[in-house]
Length: 220
Image (cartoon, rainbow, N blue to C red; front, side, top):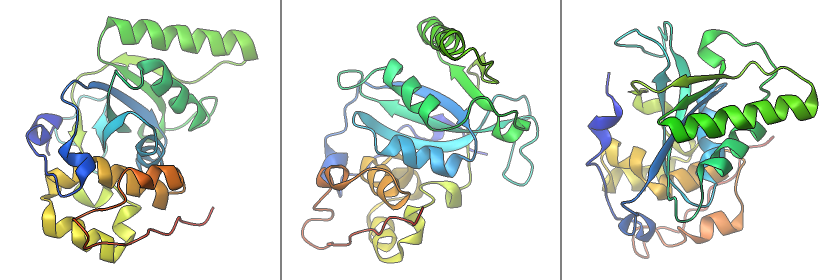
């Protein structure tokens, strides 16, 4: 099973947006149900540079989709702190699932914090929501340890249904570069029912002038 460090050097620039990726990024990791939809949700957010899905929060050394073991399905997000912040990542997290539902380990509501500052923000957000709503949340706030990258067929899941556009990505990007692509994250968001015309504007001319593929959003 791959970890996030296996993806760090994988970048490609067939899309202009991928050629101008910021180097100063911060990382957030969330469990919020099925990771397909959560990756699409974050992929539409301005300031998000990369999204990837995987397994985290447990102790098993080699989790898989068939045997998640004690881990949780999570989305990991790299974002540009000059354009957005952790507070906005948390707002997207809360809005993207029902944190009052008591789910099994694989799909639980989970915030994995990468430092003390994230812990403070997450715990403050959680307490504030409970105080305002007078409802107990099931969300756990835990320390991030290891992110196990999920199988390739889970990455940018909705985009994978766009065969022609996917073929163009695969012609230019390795599997790791595809996972790290901002353009792929944006297209996956739109196909997954998130984002709008403005989301596509940032990646309007992929592969020079060769591709004019417009993804169709999936029906609600």
